Amino acid sequence: MKSPLSVFFLTSEVMPVVKTGGLADVSSALPQALSGEGGEGIDIRIGTVGFRGVEHRKGFSLIRSFVARTPAGPLTIRIFEGRLAKGDVPVYALDLEGIFDRPGLYGEGGGEYPDNLERFSLWNHALLHLPAVTGFMPDILHANDWQSALSVPLLPHVIRPRWQTKPIRTILSIHNMAFQGVYPLDQWHWTGLPPSYNNFDGLEFHGRLSLLKGGIQFADRITTVSPTYREEVLWEPGGCGLSGALRHRQDRFVGLLNGIDEREWNPLDDPFLPVHYSRDELKGKEVLKQRMREEWGFSSAPSTPLYGVVSRMAHQKGLGLLAETLESLGESGDLPGDWIVLGSGDPEIEARWRGLAESFPDRIRLRIGFDEALAHRIVGASDFLVVPSVYEPCGLTQMYAMRYGTLPVVNPTGGLRDTVEDGKTGLWMEELSEKGLGDALMKARILCLGGGEMEAMRRRAMTVDSSWKSRARDYARLYREVLEAPPWHNPLG
Ligand code: ADP
Ligand code: GLC
Image (cartoon, rainbow, N blue to C red; front, side, top):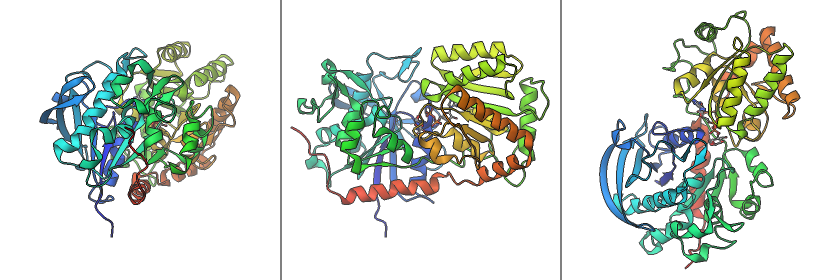
């Protein structure tokens, strides 16, 4: 019989509170799959940031306010409690005297806020005060990415070992090695950690301090979001400078594939789609495509392949290469199909795409911004979703696409390699280059105009089970396994 298990899941983003990328989707869907009814029966609660507007967020209310001792002195913490959209996983969003009340989450205009170490360290301190304040003393603290990585080494310094009925174990999940929370050492005091952690075996990283490294060094287990990405980050350049630290913890480091929320992303009843469809009845998908073509004013033949992109505009996503490739193909008069591109992020990449859309106005439609509804409609209406990432820890959009019978065209790196089967459920680029991408796009066009095989691939893609239902089990297993092992972190004085 499974023993009851409690987990405090720390994340700076969770749908529907705030979202800049896949972390928000995972932070909502994984805990739901792990919790109560129909799930793994784990008592899981989410600790998140009370970003701007939290007090007015529907379904959230102020349940408590308390004063915590922090490196900034006594700080008033307000806990806003809400529930995830479906299911009843509690979410605690913390406001710390307004330090998160800003237009951006981590920064503005492409730059980071200069006081992010202070903001996120204090948030980690506040989170660790929560068990005492709410009475929810977890078996496991599950941190995600650099934003909550400090909680791992900090835990025994806020929740003293003698107050813990049994040692709380820690798990750090890394969603992207490129973001590490690295700051000058002269700001060390914000961490609230004793100086004994300020060295190579602790958080020190090339003369600076790294929050992610702190998590890697002291967590009982480290996970990342796909098996292939795990292999990639064990060596440079994949590890972004931390491959040595990861190799040091190699036997406690696993790659667990992300899943998708099959209720949020379901072509049968997606509220963002005007028409619904299924694997057995794909007519609705064709109607969607035609509506989208009308709405966006495409004048090509109705059978013209429709390529979609839904992505952060960041170097990682390969959108620079895609722009270059389309530019060259367009100039030689052979731009494949029509394009709907939705994305935002790096101002330079955005500008590049604006230019491209102006050069080929009847073939490329661009929407700069973040638009959940449009993302669903692009995924539903397109024939292909193009994901030419330079690297990709897991990637969710290719799995959403498959579920909607939209074939992903991907660079087979990280989770893209683990989730898309070349020629079966999508197409792989042969190399990460203009030629590799151009060839894959041409192959897609031929496939689409060819008919029968495309239909079979669509159906096959739609049968792939990417649900969290099965994948969450890996986390449940890991939680149980970690509780049986002795704690790894021996608090330093
Ligand atoms: P990453 O987290 O690296 O951005 P993922 O594929 O894991 O990549 O997750 C991206 C998530 O963000 C998906 O849910 C995708 O639909 C969404 N998304 C990305 N860009 C946009 C956008 N401009 N508008 C709406 N949703 C977006
Ligand atoms: C990160 C990664 C992405 C992954 C997501 C959720 O944002 O870039 O590949 O799918 O986290 O784990």
